[in-house]
Image (cartoon, rainbow, N blue to C red; front, side, top):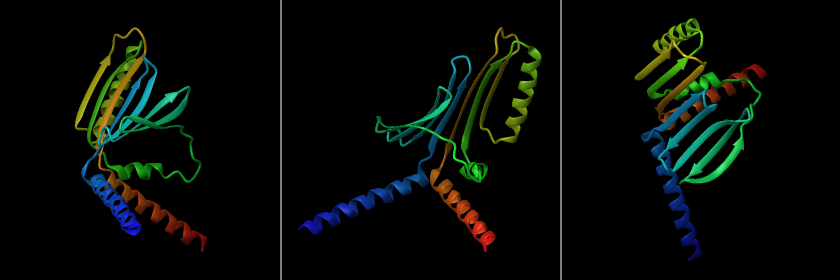
Length: 180
């Protein structure tokens, strides 16, 4: 009897895990990034199957803080620390391949020349990235310096995780080849 109950529990857990893995390939992770210098806000949010999982990174006292919520309940709050190592983070970022990128910028500087240079640089960068919606609103007559940036995107985490594992495997293979 106990063996049947244990086998049912194990099969239920494995079925739930299989469904979650399939959903990683079907349902995108929604991300949002906000930078507001007027209100001293720097925040990145990731939502998957909202309200199932929500992760938010904020800057508090110059330290990045990770908050994770599951079903609306706060589960984890941790200060993020920079790891020292080889630094393959750009390769990992390329593996993610975000879709439906939306960017909204509002900025102004007390010097109109600085605003113009920034406007040109922002427009140039927007041409290099595949952005679906781009709003650029420079304020050439601003009394004070401010920047507001809101960027959002969707990304499928299943393919991204597989690409990251492939990149890590290639780096390990190169490391083993160098050591022999």
